[in-house]
Length: 265
Image (tube, rainbow, N blue to C red; front, side):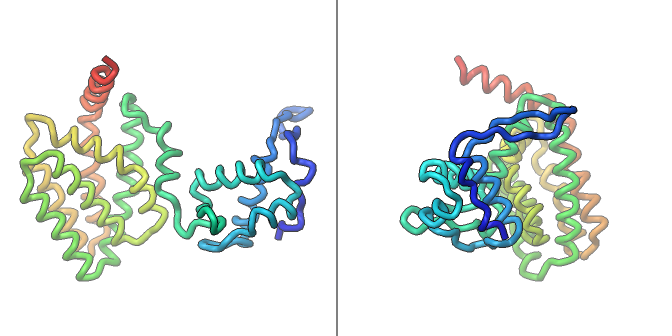
């Protein structure tokens, strides 16, 4: 338990030695950053669990020996990271679940839509993640889960001429698989990539020469493998389905750049 540790003297910018070379590297650490790291350590150690209220601001100020502005800045940073939720007038509590929004903001610089190599890395990552989710869904689904997944797939067949709606249902199909797999960490990652995935799917389905019905049909073997509880087949078909989009990445990058140029004019 770290509550007895006072930040006290850190209520101003301090110099912290960081290993690096013979003499080490000196780094400036603000009071707010020191508080953030301190609170993260206490949360990591289990002193404050998911959904639990943090002590009041007045109590934390006294406990840590810091000023009000530094403490509030630290709490704001923790909130932005998705670690805590601050309710004005009620205080702050540790988030009960991983913040998809916070993770998405962290990942934004990592997958720019204008770099084909980075997008290929992203597709490879999605293939690994969603392949595993499909395998887990095959092993753990209920009859009700299967009905919901089947309904999404049938919906895709019914609107196969509308690229935008079809892109949304395609994403919903994979999101439903993630829900069935019931792995909170992987599900959050899938959700964090939602905006990019939707954008790419809209471009994919919007291609004038794309046979939308044949693309929708690619979901069939994934669904059937999950329905038959064959995890290996579900994993393989899901990976093959996502990997097929690699051939379109260069065209997607050109499409994004053209849209950005048009918006800048």
